[in-house]
Length: 507
Image 1 (cartoon, rainbow, N blue to C red):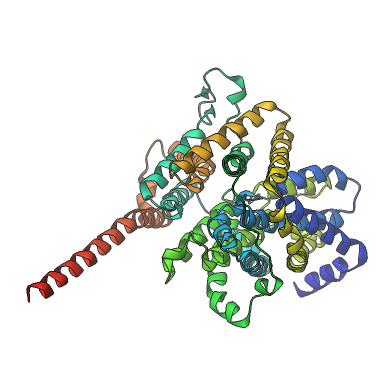
Image 2 (image 1 turned 90 degrees about the vertical axis):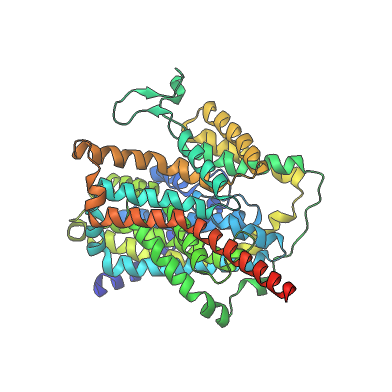
């Protein structure tokens, strides 16, 4: 292991491979920071350029883009409340309020440091525990996946700000929106109303861009006359002190572990890892009331987890040939283009490529941290641009990114429609996060449930007889009852205070 890693690191630090890592990471940061564009799109567009490259150089370029795109999204998520990528949705909950409170440098510094720590933790897991952890993950059956997703769906109530009922309504609305398309079991169109364009369902990218980016543009247009407060991004506020590292270390490590574990599970993704880490941090925090208002713990938890999913998702890709995310599926395509078959024999047949991927993940994280810390002040100047100039540019990027998905205007109209819906939901006090989470998770949840029922002839008994599904189900029930328990405690405390006052008055 040491020889393979050392050899790969020495190769990457030669001029051309290191240049590819640098170019990939910087390109990923820039594209990730632009609402409407994504790392998956960047890697997919770059794939044809790698046809005539050396396999190792091609892979390290794409790995750099992978790492950079996940981190770059926190810039606009913090400064504009427009997540550059889906994995940065949760960062908007606290990053943007902190930026609006006059501390954008602090918010960005915390996010960058947490991203770096999350990447390092997941890289260590990737290095030492790839095979055993991937074997454990592949033992998950349909009911394990179903109950795990059910648990994540219950978490949307905890993620939502304000009313738990409105959070659940938003989540179920997202699930409903995911239903149009071809029934995965029957193969028949459902909820398409004879519109052939709906046979493929509503795609994630137009919905996501509409809900978060276009709705924000509409909101800014409505308040275009309101002058935005100019906030200076100070470098001194970005660098974390020794005390900051000490205070946030446990949060970073816990969130990184959650992100890594979620990343290992194929199809779950960085967004869910970020949500689970954020919710865990808030439930364990001594200051849960600060979450959603600019909590430092919330930013750290979100960014540590979503970057940790990168290393976690590479584990099943390398060891089993199973993509852990959309980008990993594209990486499998890149390997196959170069006649490399991912899977259990990859360590034997192409060990140089495996170790290059592992080494590139480490080097790209270091490059990401240095580049982000050195260039974020320049990117932060976007806040100083008048909105009359900035909003049309953002909207153009949204349209281009959506249209480039399948070259159809239907996706653009979907994006605009969900922009209006997102604006209306926010005006009505319905949180956007649960909506997107429900939209993303519902198809996977349905697929796993149907697969399990087909295997058991319609019986749900394995949910109650297998240990993991039962554990996930019990956690879901506890999470659902936790807000009610908290409300009961608050009401009981209020009654005790009133009784104490009444007793004092009577005496």
